[in-house]
Amino acid sequence: MYRCPNNSAMPHQNGPTPLTSLLWLILLKLILRGSVTEPPVIPECKGVSHKVLPGESLCTIGAKYGVSVEQLLAENPQITDPGAIRAGQIICIPCLGTVYTVKPGDSLWTIALAFGIPLDKLIDANPQITDPDVVHPGQVICVPEISRKVSLTYLFGATSAQYLNMLAKTQGSINTVCPDYFDIDNNGNLILAGANKLNRPFLDALHEQGIRAVPFISNHFNRELGVTALNNRNRLSDQLAAAVKEYGLDGVDIDIENVTHEHRDMYTDFARLLREKLPADKIVSSAVAANPRGFTVGWHGSYDYKSLSKYCDYLMIMNYDEHYFGGPEGPISSSSFFEGSIQYALNQGVPEDKIVSGIPFFGRYWKQGESTSGVGLAGRDVEYLIANYTSSHYFDVATQSARAIVTIKPNEPEPEIWGGRKMTPGTYHIWYDSPEATRFKLETINKYGLLGAGSWALGQEILSIWDFYTQALNK
Image: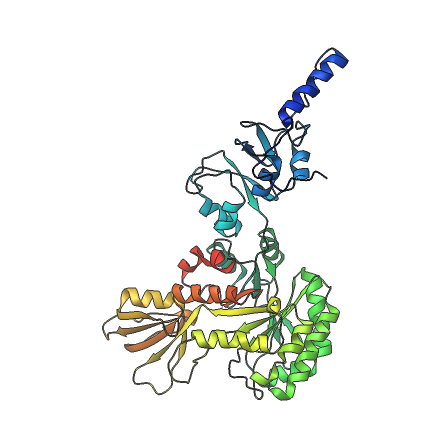
């Protein structure tokens, strides 16, 4: 192994320089052999090219690019003396990632976005680029391999073709989807989705894009159905394991909601059974209620966070519905609610790398004059209402949430929102997550060092979030 001197950044030598030594070596070869041997053939560079600057050595160049001298020598067999390189010499730097050739219209920003890595990581991996704002078609750069956080979303209420169309708008930001493939019958047995949802071409298309398919099993908040499923957990887990194998799925997400603390142990045992019956490389996850107030009974009490984390690859905190249908108006997920839910999971002993925090892509409206409200609508519905009806909107810094007031007049068209519901004339108070609120949540996930972000549900989001989603999540 070649050892770099401690002062390799500013080489200083009292004796003969490496270049002088090399000249003597060549002269010696001339004397001994009577001729100069042919220099080694320089292989085509499979990394990026670097022009040696005055004062640089292999040690300083290696430190700059994050590679060892041994790796540099392996890529540059023409270098016979590690201590003898000259200014102006072109050497090949191995790329610890993907070698990419810049295309017309590319920028480092668009390349970073396409590969799903932070821009600063791409800049750091390419110190040969003196101006990050300027790259040229044909230029070769190194896209480093970094570990991306889990970026999960739920797929609900559409067909596989529609899901692919939704995913195409995310700018490559999603690496895990939880489609609505698994329901439960009245006996607690598995019901599989039809071929318009669950089909091989769709799953193949996901896998070609590097997206994992981890379907969720749901009782759709029906307590009786949920309890029946848990009582039938041994057989149900067998059925789920068989479906994962048959369709080449990547795991199972448990989304049984609205059972109680009385079913806590059964719920945990269901996760244990799935972990035992699925191959080790398949995911077992559980969607759990956000619990910033630390409730131990009722629905919130059904989730034993710490025990579930022993059997699950991660817990997906449903970090939304702070305010809900039938309750008073307010944020869907305020900053204190969002952080409090994460802190609760950590205080229960769940490791940071087993927590995925959910983000709402939906909002809720409360109509003036109605005693019961809080109806859900998509984030993009809110954008449409603000743009097309009498409205005012603002961002509440205290809660990191967005609020809008929209008035639909009697003579105006009645807008149809997510789920086919029509909004009748009247004034509506709407709370939702604007792009600013979404960015705050992604930054908070980073602040706590969590495994990643989840979202309910794809197709409801404000599309402009995808311009920053991957960058904000993977800082």
